[in-house]
Image 1 (cartoon, rainbow, N blue to C red):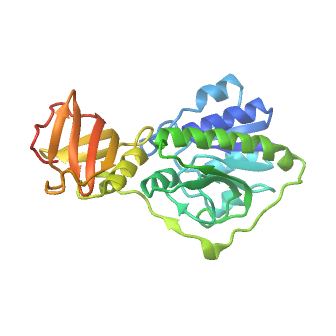
Image 2 (cartoon, rainbow, N blue to C red; image 1 turned 60 degrees about the horizontal axis):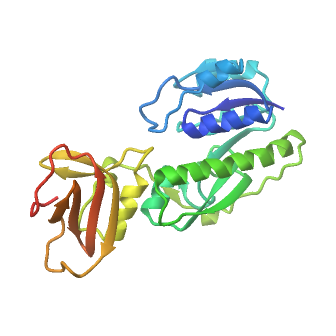
Image 3 (cartoon, one colour; image 1 turned 30 degrees about the vertical axis):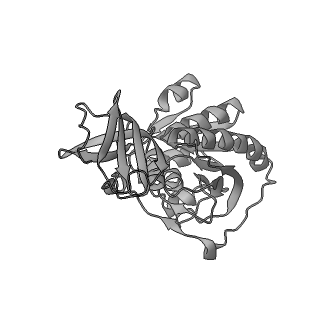
Amino acid sequence: MKIVFIGTVLFSYKSLEKLIALQADIVGVVTKQNSTFNSDFYDLSPLCHQHNIPLLHTEDINSQANLRWIKEKKPDIIFCFGWSNFIKKPLLELTSMGVVGFHPAKLPQNRGRHPLIWALALGLKKSATTFFFMDEGADSGDILSQKDFTITKEDNAQTLYNKVIQISLEQIEEFLPLLKNKIYLRISQDHSKANFWRKRRNNDGIIDFRMSHNAIFNLVRALSHPYVGASLLYKEKEIKIWHVKTEQTTLYSNIESGKIIDIKAKIIHVKCYDGIVTILEHEFKELPEIGEYL
């Protein structure tokens, strides 16, 4: 079974590395030379050069030149793991077995953009890793493989990203021989149960201390590494916040939200709507003062 692989992020690299270890027949890799769009961008070219895999850099996956390049490789199937641009019908129909995509959510729920970020920001306790056959819709094709995972209070974007990678590599090992031997199942999605997550906007990452302590905690961990970081505004400057702990308390119930209660050893304690936010990791070059507002 000949495979063309498409991807451009760390998850793509780990998946391609796994496929190579499984001795999959990778006849070509399509990736980007660089990406400011993907904060988890990862260069696949060293891995391709090491294993003598034909490599194509592109910004437009649907161009006629790219379609010709892929068609010349005569793939039976395309794996598209970690590609943010829309794939159009000519590419979807280029191979006999289609295009397998990936989405770290429990499809048909939570289709759309930034699934790990939204799962953490919304405080979800469970999600799933899903490989599916791509169609012209958004994450709406038949499911090939799906595995549930839990989201703990200790998880942040990095730990959840790592968890998703580990589970997904196990899935690849399971379904690759099924595809080779044509004994895989295609499970149709129940579209009536679908919802769609929108693209995250810049202001979605701004901490407002009128929010609850849980909402602030979830926002910060959702946008931590490898993503862009949550932020707050101080003296008209954007300050990145990477790690906080929070507690619900009525101890400062008569103090306004956003007031700095205490600062010790660069650790900043701030009143929020229903408690205290302790900022543990931040990018303040000049610390604010006790009594100031954030």
